[in-house]
Length: 259
Image (tube, rainbow, N blue to C red; front, side, top):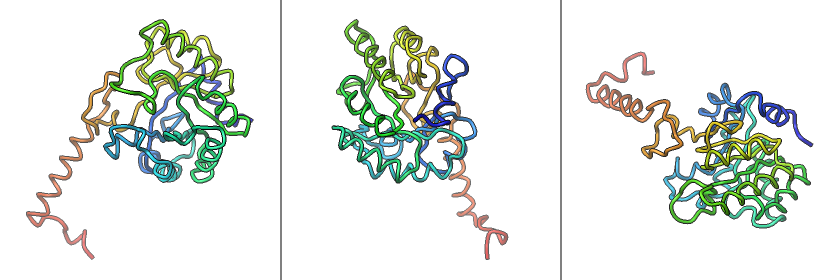
């Protein structure tokens, strides 16, 4: 059964763009909740917070602990949690871990990477009343070698298109399309009845998602699909430097900062 929150997201298709960002803590989630339709606790936290060179290193326990924190800041947005690498290799494992994530975090839905290859698992989860978001195009959990956009060759385009179609028919409520060539992203978005959420996949998608740490300028890497809306790294550096100077000059703490 589709929840009211998810129905609200689906109804936005072709009417109003869907806004999505990632969060890994309560403080950030609380701010994003005022602006986002969907807040994703993504396995991107592996690189954003832990400096992992792959999302494959993110454990189930790690994503659950961050999701617990995020949930405390969420009141309005739909909260989605990524299922980490090797937590949905078969139907039994996927259902056990999906239920565990939802029980521990009280999230609204989970997200899996892949299409035809995992379709039986997706259907099994949905049959057991788990709300699922799909993910096609660039799949960080299974990508080998350098990350690059998807949809160059006819074979690749057909695969991504077919993956999106079978996911939509399986009952997922939305699909993240990562680094999908823009004409293919447009074709997929117009061919399925559920929303597409793009990252590096053009304005033709029904919504957009970014890693919040990238948006805020906390990461040095400059990906093509990222627009930095702030430079918090510089602001934090400046604040820490002011604090340092005050401590050295005995300007902090003042009497009003002491007991």
